[in-house]
Image (cartoon, rainbow, N blue to C red; front, side, top):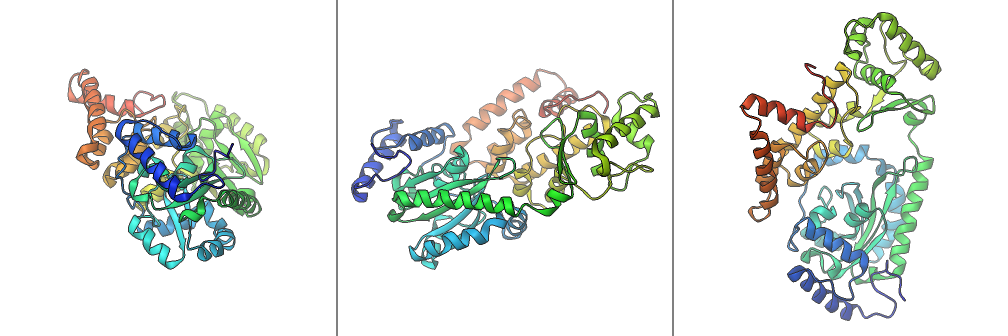
Length: 441
């Protein structure tokens, strides 16, 4: 029995397999039947495409304009692996009239390089840097499906869900952060039928593993030796200081997040007001908390008079807000795993969290991009946001709006049941949050 991960079994005739797959694709898009010789990995992807109501005539959209793409690529972790990708894949791609492509974890193409004639064909297809090739946007395709399932994928001809991609074959493997295991993106080889060979899938897997080894060796100095704080989407922040990784308790997480937000420092009174809901908390309480934090962190502990970080402290939420302010919305959302310290009820954190969420939400709605809006409303913090659903319905082609409009009607009925406009507006703000909201914050 052949390897189910390989698109074209040994000895199979590419022309015959192409005709079989086109018949199977037509059967599936017509009435949802999966017929031989469709592989299980492709059948599962096709079903996901059907559930997402993708059209087999779908076309890619460029989400990252040139200026935004340039700054995003410079900051992306896979930029450090590009010399290796070019060394290992570049010559192979040029010799075989193939393309080297690298995408991020959202399926957005960051680099597409290779033989000029093949590049021109790919441009006509929309396989270009800045275009979104996520499975949810372009259906079954090697880079998009590889990041969706977190496994290497080879896609041959009519196995692609989009008919316009049927003349192409591709193989891709995800690349993971060697420290966290998180998928950073995928490396892909795209070209003609010759890539349906088992060797191309094994090759791209080996390239991905080599890239991960390279990223381990090239781990950026500031994260290893400097200070950084990761606080989005988690109740207990991760602090990297002096080469140590420290998972902070909730109160210490709040303190470090507030100090990262105020690099100029905070007085004891200012920090207490930002931390404690009960304004009558004694200054002794804060001093005791800071003493415990200093004992935990040692040389990397905050300084006093005013309270401030011992050195430059890079925080994930400050990087996010800088990108949003610069208009790099797609790049910013790539770094938005959720609200800031979601369980915190500290007044200063609640205000900052709402400000960040409102800034991100406003940027997504203003961009009016269907892919970004879909990601937002499919998240826990955007699932019940009527304005975002309304913007998504407006951004979609008329034939694809029914699901968004149905969800919008349901939310409007639910919110309308609360009564007057003031109550409805308050309900909308509350429902967008996925964390406790203290009254009057």
